[in-house]
Image (cartoon, rainbow, N blue to C red; front, top):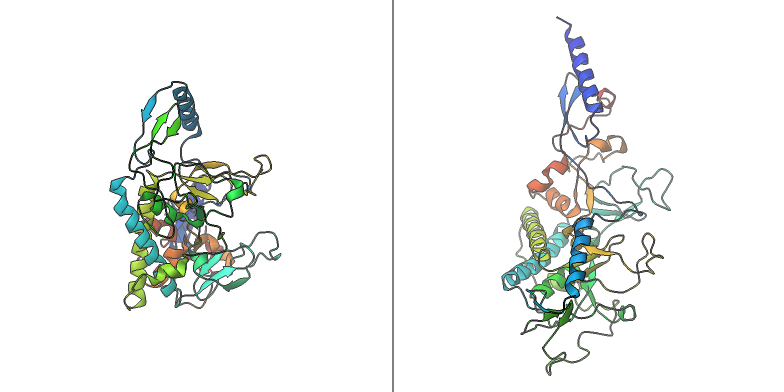
Amino acid sequence: MLPRETRTMTMLRELALRNSSTNSIVGNQLKHRHGFHIIRQTCTEFPRKLKKTERKPWVTNINELKRIGRAERKERQIVRERILQPPQNGLLVKELIPVAHQVNADRIQLFTCVSKVAQSIAIYSCSVCGEVHIGHRPHKIRTCNVMGSAASKEHCWRRGAIEHVLPLVESFHLYDRLGRAVSHNERLQVDRIPAILELCVQAGIDLPEYPTRRRVFPAYSISGRVIDFEKRFPKEDAPGKDIYACGFWQKRNNISDDNKSVDMQPCDLQGTAVRGMEAWERMRSGASRLMETYAVQTCGYCSELQVGPKGHRVRNCQAYKHQMRDGQHAWQEATIDDVVPPVYVWHVRDTQSEKPLVNGLKKYYGMLPAVVELFAQAGASVPNDYVVMMREDVAVPEWDEEKLVV
């Protein structure tokens, strides 16, 4: 029999050779044993940040989109009437109207819970690259690698706010979702509202400050052209009712006004975090259900979004090769992360520790969306979808043990 130390080193060498031959290892599980760390492969995978020259992944395969386009062009050559189904014919899907009301209620409750929890847990934001950190001691991880950052790639922290945790993604409000797209000359006249709110409005929510057209009779498609048999401007509707000359700099309905409409009963911090976590999950699941029926378009290179069957014609894209598109956006199907973008932050396990996260051990740290991390530090349980990203099964070594890690 070999000595005990020799057997341990032989086993660690075999594990190192086996792990080095595997290129798909993203996360590791570590356990202490005689001062060493035994590594086991897991399926942890962090979201990859796209480069400026990369396009967002297609929701539908590009070959499938080409096949659908060829079929539609062939269908338009035949002059015949085609019956459309809701919401393509302008009518509402009655089964999704309660879902839209629930998503809007969860959105308001989420902002209220985040504002209350943010009064007790600090939010930091980098003034150079915009990275966000949740917790009292900002991390020391050197990931500030943008133009204008320091040579050491250290972040320049400042106190953040709710918009750093829940970034606001806006969309043009459409009075008629089957009407023409917003032109470039109307970009300062048509209202811009949160995209999640515009999705709820098109799905059945009626807001007096954001009127929308509700059809009684369905529209039809003849040779690919939508024909509306209703009067274009009924007597009860004004011709210019869908356009307001206030511009995007005057917000009639902001986040603070929405928060006032919710009467939150006084309770402890943990109860508020639990309700906020539930509202976050319900809002994302409900919005995903709405997006399966109501189309949402996003630019493949920038964060521009348009709720509706087609994108707008505003030429304000400044992303990769926008000169070749004359500033127009490269529209494609959007996902839930485009409507409600999660801001990923480093996960802090021990909130009571005064030691910040260091750069040398960043490969052992986990990540979470900023909203989930904020509520988790307040005492709420993390949903199962994010448990793997936390890397709780990874043992973070001490500084004197780092050189012993295989």
